[in-house]
Length: 221
Image (cartoon, rainbow, N blue to C red; front, side, top):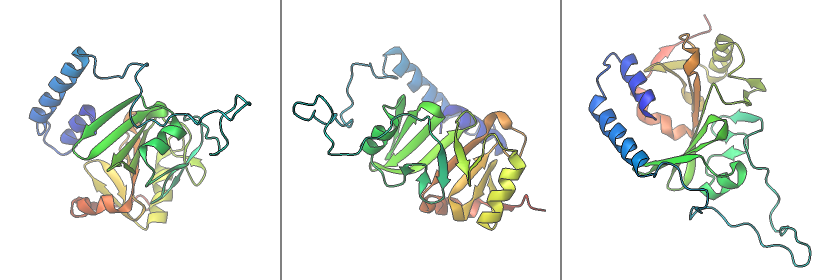
């Protein structure tokens, strides 16, 4: 979660200054990283966890066929598979597997035991202990579908109704609509805040810690 998200969540929670001290520290830290050129790795840098390409097969000049080719990049349809992942990005995958699929990340952050990687198509993927457990996307992300419907281009209320019917209910928490049994949350779909539409899908266990903060809400009436 970035500084803009923290500001917005604090405002929605009714206490706009709630995270001011923490945000100030984060902004100072970001400014320090920017000043010292630490925000974006140089193109010549090779991250230690990026796998090297397979050696060429002798006499062919082509990559070894030991592993099937993987199409890199984010120009793909990413169907949401609830509790499992998005498209071919599956929970439980390691960082190297994701990099083979999406290519090199644009940025990364590390907070405690969680590492977040940021990719083209406005995707962010969170890892704990090197394992993918959460995937986020925004209204600028293309090809994010649920039951073959592009959730960011479809009419927002119809998306909420469809997913609520599948989940058997919906909940609200600080402006986020949470479909607990599906491990999915949406924001900006129900309150007219279309500029900030976003989606998060995570392993189901991630939602249990916030269960007591959820308030029932329905879009089916």
